[in-house]
Length: 352
Image 1 (cartoon, rainbow, N blue to C red):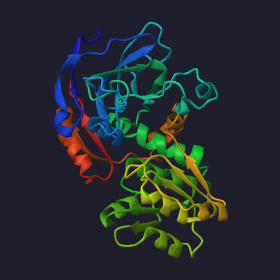
Image 2: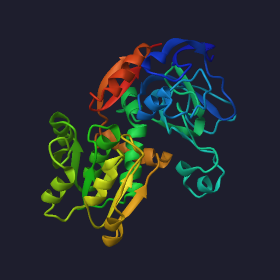
Image 3: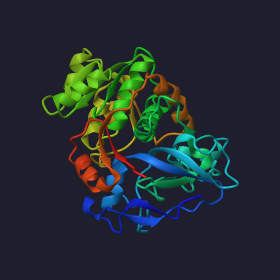
Image 4: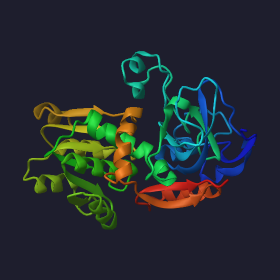
């Protein structure tokens, strides 16, 4: 029997973390092809903060809204027309992207580029800051035995985005040199590990030495504190003025232009965002003179996530979890993440 009501964290207007409220709301009602999952853990992502504050308004002012795109939980109900072979009770996570499924991009194998109705769970539609969440059943991904609910919540956005950047779009190869910016972000921590698995030499940047030491433990070879040195000068010094083959970049602002200057001839920057700023300036002479490539990378596909599940199960890839808050303390968790004190994912634990 599906529940009628549930505990959730909602917000009814844009604003600071205090707009988040823990309360009772109606439980999701399944529609055609959907699944209902009992949530045990849910992760915070950068777009949660932006959507709550109104800097990003994917919900288009429709309130109340529930955030949360990444979760670990248990399948508890299926619509009669749901397309999945997973039995009730299966431990699951999910691909968080909600494409239309029939546009030119979806039909040619690029649903993460959906051109008609591109949406995210927890951004455009109600998400998993709740005891229950619904999504298309065919989006569900079963968890291997060694993957916990907390691992599952920390995994999809961070590792999916990183894999799509490094492997699918960036084409990083063994023996290459790769600069991963902003070591303490979830995407960067995943990218460091993925690059090392491939056999690349990894440079990484961060704002503090303690974060760089944590990045070293994940496999980073060269550590650069951009508050004490210019990271372009340091990359060029460490590579004997050659530069790196690839930069994994999602900071934006002046980091994009600096990343271009870090590249060797024929190198490429893969960019997936602008957490610092979308306003970037790049000197075009570097691009044409050195035949450089700037490659966009958007979210991930379900296949990207499924490719990594065996590696998460056997320990070749490891989630990094900084802190777990109770769901009722979501506002405090947002404040903590905004203060940038973390190294790793910040999670919410959901009690039942």
